[in-house]
Length: 254
Image (tube, rainbow, N blue to C red):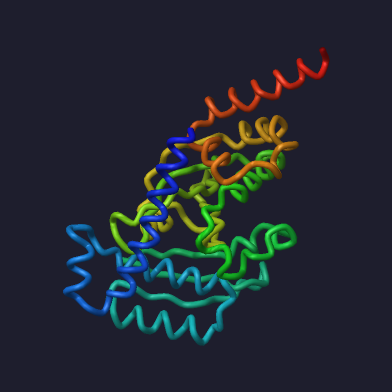
């Protein structure tokens, strides 16, 4: 797993540097073409993701409306607006893309009390975070409350078709996605459209709850690389960590 961790970290470091270069060169077409070197620019998807991030980071409503207006001028198949939901006493983002309607909610509005443990959810601090720990804990919480869900890990893509990041999210049976870095709850088809996600693994929520009992005492000691290992190589990881726990327990008894 160490080799995988090193490889993934190297890919993501390279990706971040690549995205920075693309963003700096975006207004100069010759430089963009040279940097892309055959890769596809995911400008529409990236801007939609940026709009969702604006909405879920408590940005000024006037700025959000202005962003929507500019997107409507650029893309004829797009429309959007903020709307208030009186029953839930919170705002939602209503998007119309290629004739299909989507509703985006703030995760921090939907999951009660979540800001007490993750106050950064409504700030830009969370945007570059892959959400491994958050997704693990959320799947565990859902399962313990009888909500069927899946902890999903895969690659998502940024401003280009080669801007690859390892990421995790939680999916419910009805296709709703709970994503930490977006602070959003949205339909899987919209999530897939803006991220072009490529799944690597799925762990049932009830399995996560079972595993939580095994590793909860070590949770504070687990790094992002440990959680990557758990999510991408679940069976091997659990054998390794549970085996080491049993060995330690045997030594203590003797």
